[in-house]
Amino acid sequence: MSKSIIKTNLAPAPIGPYNQAVFAGDTLYISGQICIDPASGDLKNKDIQEETHQVMHNLKAILSEAGMDFSNVIKTSIFIMDMHQFGAINEVYGKYFEKEFPARETVQVAALPKFVNVEISMIAVR
Figure (spheres, rainbow, N blue to C red):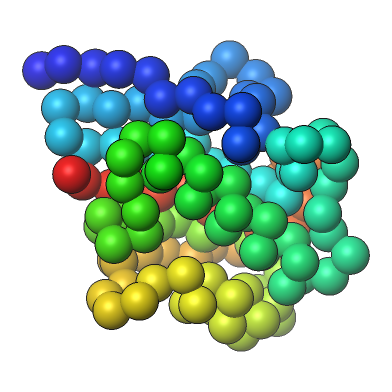
């Protein structure tokens, strides 16, 4: 099985000892993304909608670098600070998938990196 690292300047650089994404064979594993604007390094989190859009833009940039788009995504994991924001996150998240939605789980957690409100990771297949 071949393994290769995916890296793009159009998504935030990792804030720890991990990669933005790793290809293993034909499967792409994307690390959890938060609302960091890769151009400025600032958090885009004036509200949960802006935060979720920035997370999805970061994921889109990584997918694109790997020659993929949201139609390749088969599984997502969503980690949120407050389950009361589930509906607002869903509304934004759903706009990024055209025909079919991937499998997923959504989990409320005690804290996320940089104390953001949402983090999303993905698995995609070519």
